[in-house]
Image (cartoon, rainbow, N blue to C red):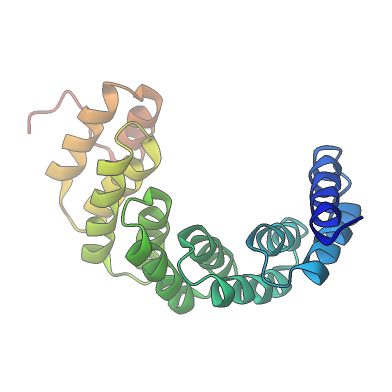
Length: 192
């Protein structure tokens, strides 16, 4: 079997094993793919994903650092690195990685959201608002960014802005709007 066919066979096996939930066996296939093609983006990303999924965050971060080193223009790889770093509570490094992802692809709405969460956790609320405004422009029908934006506006003592968001959410996510009403004490029927 030629090098190329062996690689494709391993990739097909890895994919099939993932579908079957046999993660350890799939990981072995990705390792074998990397032995054939050491900087293969798909195999590197798959291995990192499996490590993160298994809860091996430090190993996942290491694998994602290798991936971003080999493929520095891969916005998704930078996002995934930032996400795992954020899960580990490493906000400073997560913020840098989110920044790399956004420098490559400013339309990556999940990176704006992740960056906003870092800013919220580090009490940089004005920065969080800017990031959430990017996120909600890119994903106007997703309630997550809107919810966080309303919460941040309350923390900034801007109930008028939070109320505007609650009214907006009533149009397409009434359950989220009702949750915000309960949490903030604001009600969409109130005058602005």
